[in-house]
Length: 288
Image 1 (cartoon, one colour):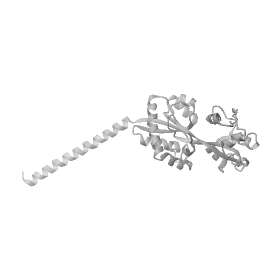
Image 2 (cartoon, rainbow, N blue to C red):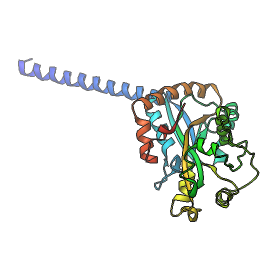
Image 3 (cartoon, helix red, strand yellow):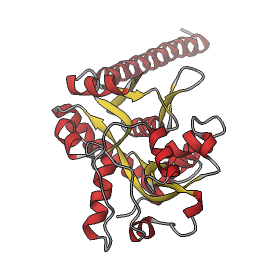
Image 4 (cartoon, rainbow, N blue to C red):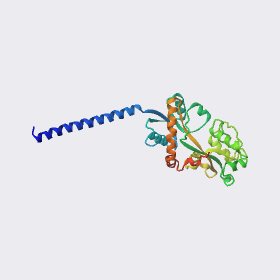
């Protein structure tokens, strides 16, 4: 064999070996990726479908909202898990969580002892709900915070004991110099509450900021006719949490969620998402 032919043969053999090596590498990587996919734990996430900006379905038909965005950021941090989202009603979300149809439910939920008995609630909050008082505009110069309302001996619209807002007032009263009179609610509508305040039957309605803005401040709000006669001020931010179906798999996930959310808090992601969806950092209202 002459020298030129020898080089050609060697070159062909080298090319074949290279192609074989690359093929094996690609095949191995494909198998690895396939194996990783098989090892992923899929969690079913249910969220309310019309509670903007917390959780909703956007114009493209996609799951959206602040809490959904936080869960998607958590998902990106957790290689072991992948989430599948289902927009649904409040009732189906809670029933589905109890039955195990869903692993995670997010609905702007506050912590309550009753919920803690039914579900796993992680340590780290997913968001916050800003709560405050709707009062008559004529009183806004003298009633500016919860203490001045309590000191005025004003009457608060009754609250259902099953409502987490009832517990918030109870907690305030434990250390208040002038406790707020707390009456258990009978059945009434939000329209009643606003009307009662305007009529002077009561002096304040313990109201969520988002609800007041959508119902009264917004030009297309159901009670916008009261906008020039009612005012609202903030009390505090109440942390919101995802609710998890009770089982060992989700107990393990809760620990991973807590670690991921803490990182998202520390790197500013949660504040940025809050600014995007609420126009402000709702966590700034949260106090110890």
